[in-house]
Image (cartoon, rainbow, N blue to C red; front, side, top):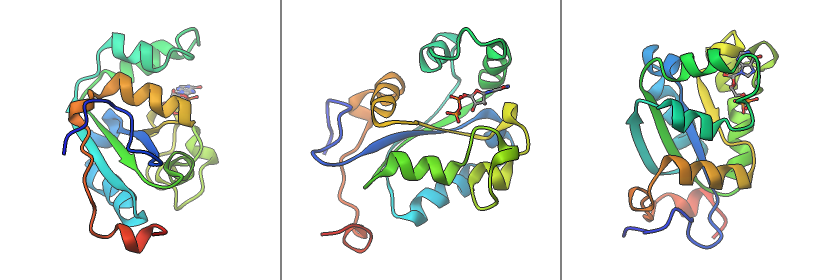
Length: 161
Ligand code: IDP
């Protein structure tokens, strides 16, 4: 079944997760996907892309004026990124806690950033920080036809019926 819009089915929550160029180069894509799968979330879209400066400046519209933005732009456009949309109860907030704080020096072991990174400018992964942000970012990165509304056979074992 294919959706034409990027909106999730009723009551389903979705977020944008992206493995940044350092995560791809370091071979961490599988490990990061595994964490979301094993937590019980459902993958509804995935693609590899070279991020353009235009896409990045839309994505980070609140960061464009920051002094470190040129570094962020060089980093995020330096190689391929894996962009994903994950779905499930409370996925926005839960994935932020799975990813850990922006600055890896503040990140607990057990979080993605806490386990795989040591510097804010190479922090491996992006996760939307709010429901509104997630909707905006999913629309920016994906077309509705590329998000699949599918039934996962383990749903009844991870979600309340
Ligand atoms: P988030 O990725 O945890 O949502 P944001 O504040 O939205 O954090 O920042 C976006 C990205 O910009 C960060 O993940 C990080 O890669 C980069 N960044 C943020 N602050 C700095 C900084 O002070 N120096 C270098 N890069 C930074």
